Length: 316
Ligand code: BDR
Ligand code: CA
Image (cartoon, rainbow, N blue to C red; front, top):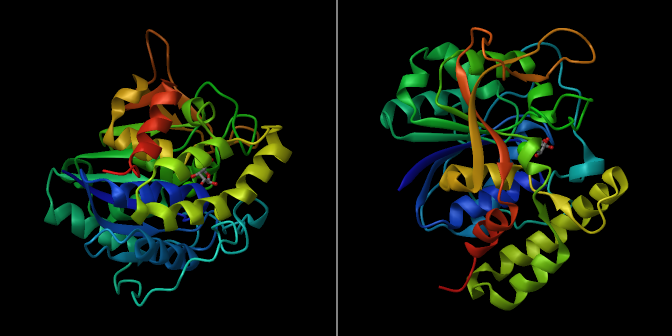
């Protein structure tokens, strides 16, 4: 059983990743912490609570609001043209009675790590601000958690918010660099692999035929939420009726790393400059820079990853 904490900025792709985790029999989600990114940290928490209500995992999942700004400077605001005004593609999720937890997101990370020493998998689907703040409170965090799986970065592929940087890392490079330097067992699932793994409307049609009855509401939600995401992917990248699978792929890697090809490389984040700020720098040279090694995902069996993702919702 994977004991998991999800840290996210609950947008469209985050939501699919969360639903996947909540439906996995081999995963127990101990908590969800939110930050700003696709949407503000408060709306991200509200979306997460409504997703738990939709997935009905059969156990309680506390949700804590985290950082609503990066470590340095202000947050540049939400991205309604990608994730809709509410962060989930303007899809209407039913409200739930659950309220956000009284503790802050970074405190929840520290608490769950201390309560489950050596057992917690932290999956970050947004900026690494909450994890960096948790690290500040508990410097032993890299030894307390089992591992971190992070969606972020573009090591060899082009970036998605600048020529060389990806949104989650570029949104808070200082936080990401602190996390890279801390010595976590860290796997980075970046655009190199998420940018060549796609969901299409055909996948949703197949789901219509084969998914379990209790997953119907999830499928209805995904159809609604993904409309905007497909349209953005088409306009922005000329992807015809397909969208890249960012956060859900990180979640698949967290439960089954065999879908990706990994290379351990010394890795830092560029925190200066203008064009390269937020770039993930992994050193492939024989005599590399002196930095902790991160597991960098360089290739992926996309078909198997999508099967793993969507197959989770099948009839038993
Ligand atoms: C990442 O940025 C966010 O928009 C997505 O949710 C994903 O986590 C992709 O660069
Ligand atoms: Ca995200």
